[in-house]
Picture 1 (cartoon, helix red, strand yellow):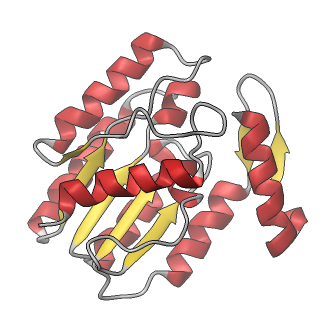
Picture 2 (cartoon, one colour):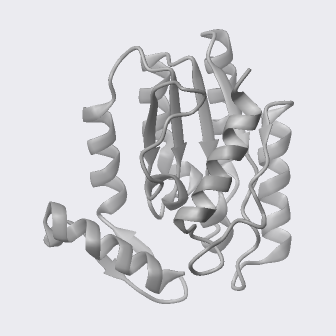
Length: 201
């Protein structure tokens, strides 16, 4: 997964300035600089009066342009982000007041565990969105990567699902991938369909 992600980010760097993205690879690889740069770019580009915002990690960021339910959809994905890394975007999204927010993250928390403080952060965010009349949908985790810990995976997925309540989007477990995790264009078709089936009504 790290090799594929490095290649994808290299391509992004070639477009926006290769020096903007620095990688350190290894069992606990981490994207240095990209999370902050991408988060700031999202905040600067978020328009008001959006229908749908999708917040998440690399699976979201690398998704092709798409609309859901025929409605404008904004991609707020940040490659390499753990749930705690998305707190700034969460606050900004809350201020925008979209009609619907889709949250798809957590697999990087499985691969690089960092405590469980994010659970309360996510639950508080959900409550604030609900009080503002914003509908939050949470997608469950993609299939467990080979290097992931099953117990950590099940704990995080359970916490996500308990937070989501009835607003659950099922990750398409059989979706086509390039590395067992990151989706191909065909895989994204299944992923987008799963989102649409849940929130379009």
